Image 1 (cartoon, rainbow, N blue to C red):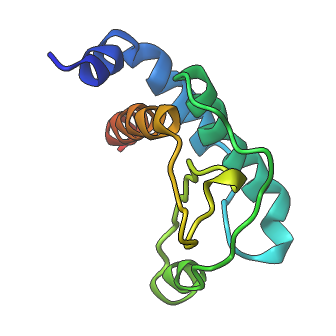
Image 2: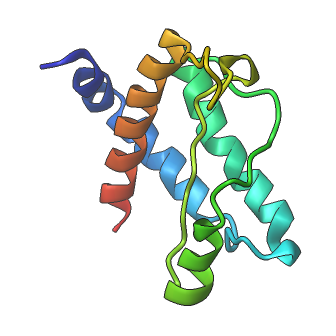
Length: 121
């Protein structure tokens, strides 16, 4: 079994408990009135990334994907964005890079998140 899948399998109960706790956050939204809940929910993937050995981002930033708001407002689809890049990665610049440990931790975090989500429904 590949290492990320083995890790997910061995930690299944922990992941499930974490997801259930995550889903109890009242309404993650792009609406300004729900910003506190959104920030609380945003910390969960960051914490999971840190536990998986990645380097968590230092700041909440972005905003270059306005379609995310439309997913919720027009389609009623909640969206979770997980950033694994660092400010020093130089995104969209000629010397863009991606820190390899964050790439690996992103895979482990994604496996963990999808596994937990599949068990919640």
